[in-house]
Image 1: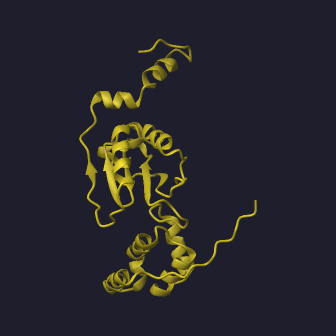
Image 2: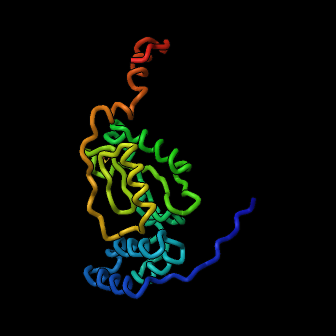
Length: 211
Ligand code: FES
């Protein structure tokens, strides 16, 4: 099927965000240095950074749209296509992987009925995997918009999604939520196959009894 071309939509920030943008730009010796916080304001305003928004940022910062696009496409925190109201980014790097990130992603896929990179039909959630977010000591963790949620378990993910479904995103609230370390039983429940897999490896792939 031939993709339908997207209609161009004029972009500008709200008056309040425009004022914030001007205050931010004034803090830097050169306008381009303000590109990351300005792109955050655009994300707050629209949820993603459209080609028109990139042109707007380029004009505001006296640079080329290609430069803005290069920044937007480099960082996983920005999106050049529409995403859900809440963007769930699960860390997939070593500490999180070892502590159950795969189980968390599988749980999110099942609960939301989407695959990685997709958005739910109601436009509420987008699911992504990202590299280390520097909270390795409280793995597994994920970032939801700008906020970190740490020491995740499937039950905690469920409670969080229930809460998010009932409210609007709060962009100013970036205080991380660090739950208590999950119990050993909770960890074990996230790796139901690990004992069997290890023994299967040691027995050259032969079937093994449940441990
Ligand atoms: S490995 Fe996940 S936060 Fe560092």
